[in-house]
Amino acid sequence: MVRAVDTTSARAQLRVESSAAGSPSAGLRSLPLHWQEKLLIGLVAGCLITLAWGLGGMAYWVQCTGLALAAASFVAALWPRTYFEPGRDFRLILWPRLLRFPLFWIGLIYVAFVVVQALNPAWRFMRSDQGWWIEPLEYATWLPHGVEGTPLLKMNAWRALTIHGTAWLLVCAIWVGFTRRKSARVLLWTIGISGVTLALLGLLQRLTGSTKMFWAWRPPFEYYFGTFLYKNHAGAYLNLIVATCAGLAWWHAERAHRRLQKSHPGMLLLFLALLTFAAVVFTFSRAAAALGLGLLLILAIGYAVRVSFRARGGTPPLVTSLMAVFFVGFLGLAAYSLNIEKVVDRFGLLFEEERTAAIEYRKQAAQAAIDMGKDSPWVGHGVGEFRYVFPRYQYQYPMIFTEGKRRLYWEFAHNDYAQLFAEAGWFGVVLAAATLIYLLMASVRQGVFSRPAKLALLGGPLVVLLHAAMDFPFGNPAILATTAALIVVTLRWTELEHGKGLTVNASR
Image 1: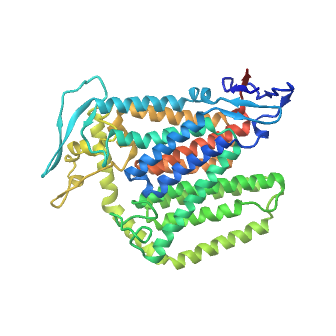
Image 2: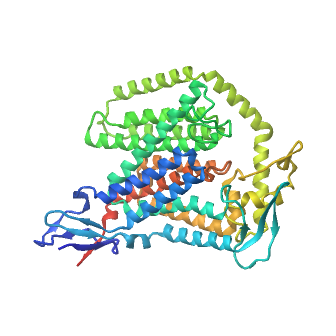
Image 3: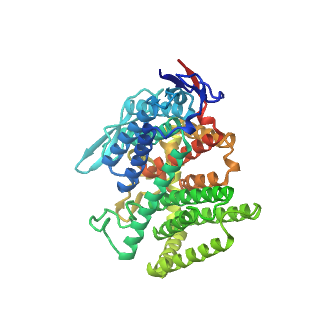
């Protein structure tokens, strides 16, 4: 006989009784990882890897593939799992956990909001041989509104839903479907290894002076790195990988100390984190390099303080010192091989440009986006429709409107928060704020702030959130999905360490 197990009780201790003898048996932790959970890990990892390696997720076919994998992950997470073990056969039902997950409902509200915007157009996109423009339409003024007829292959509400829906489905799948700490670690290792490999690809491109991606295809932009078309996106994504490797390294070091182990994968992970940061520098992204350096310094200081207050055990100090010398020597060799003088000169030029025009361009673009939002402060002008409505406000700022006789075209506001306000108004801002508040409360409730390794893992998403105030990292599907996944898998891992993730009731 197979008993059904649901997750309706958040405080009851997991006890799956034997269907044959009636004696208590061990919980899920004592069972092998279920094949459906292995499938779920593979689907989530496959989605994140596809987005990162498929031009950073900027191609439409990659976004559709990512959405399909995310939807499959969602289904796999909710599908009941039957455990066949001697004397303790039971079925695990996880969908009640989804209904208790606030981000599921916030995401559902957001999807409904964007659909209403798309179905209630206030403008129609028009095109001729001379160019394109938007014409006003009659619409229901009491409902959110958008733009009609905008091209899917460039951007519109439906494509935005494809991108945002992928991240939302992945978040729900991880939160509901991960029932073991091992699942979280496997996913984090997979993300880290994939990201480090991508960083190595970018470094090899710089080393060989290649102007073609994969040495075969010439991207439309000269400032690509690795598989990312935009250097700032590459830098932001690689900062996530730096934090992932550093957080895992810290966790392995802490576990080795508790178990009095002399060696552990933490040293390798630290090396991979430093190697990835070297790649961040060679993206030539000012903001990413500065934020990544700040992250590493904070983590280094935090770890030094942590080590100084703990008892002896774990890795001998001599081994740690030798590894540090090796890391510094390796980075020095890499810097020499990759012509560090060129990088320094390049950064000098970039910072000189920044003092003149770059910051002012972005400040004015963000201000124009805020002006756009002020014309429809409650519901914005349509998620995914920024580039079509923005010219109506852009012309008021000559610096960002024309360059010589050429008219400038802005696809993004280069400030994700200003663009969110322009597209979704205060409604979208409140949903985003509610999401962040929930995540913060969950972090406090689960004791993340007393677990430095988990804080290190969350350092990457925090850096990207800061980066979003001066660029548009969340306009990149790979960064958006990976950031969301890293936050939720870290919180889920912490929850499972408390044993809260295995709290269920059994019923016939």
